[in-house]
Length: 229
Image 1: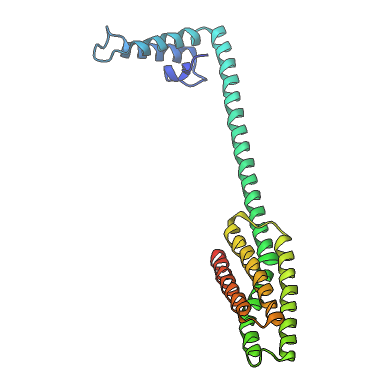
Image 2: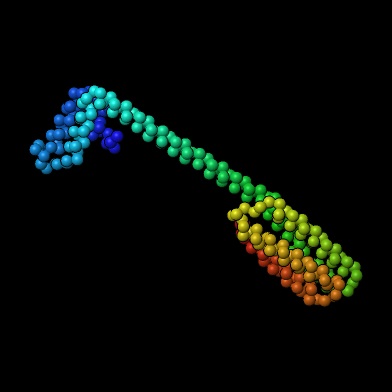
């Protein structure tokens, strides 16, 4: 079927009478025929006008053409409808995906980041006061016992933080924050083990190394917070 609509070519409606079609045909022929108007000559347009008139001036040809035109228009509308439905489904799927992503982020922040954040903050901010108490007399058995109890409590809290951290996969948007938290916990674990050697040897180097590891952990902790805000 031609890409050109015969009714549009003759500039008549689909319900035009035979007389209206003939009148339109004569008018267009006069416009485009070189013998009538040499300034406006369009051979292709003349061919389309003649083809349109040939089909629409014959009742049987016109009926067949109208059926094909209706079928073509129906297909066009069906295609448009399918595209619209597909676009709508895609939009709904996108909204659902975004909603799921948002819910996953909220869940991770609530169940993983915030509780782990609180535990790490407590561990990291408590070391200085513990070191100050121990400095009063590093060889005092009671102070050493309290220091070891403190380290045991830190281990338990850190283990709880590690379990919470592994309980949910981190959202892609917070991958950097999750990495900082992971390495922060690793530094804390190493720091605790270094500090634990002091009561066994009374070597200040273990205290200094443990404190340095905690300082690195604090930096990672801050970077994790900055990645989330």
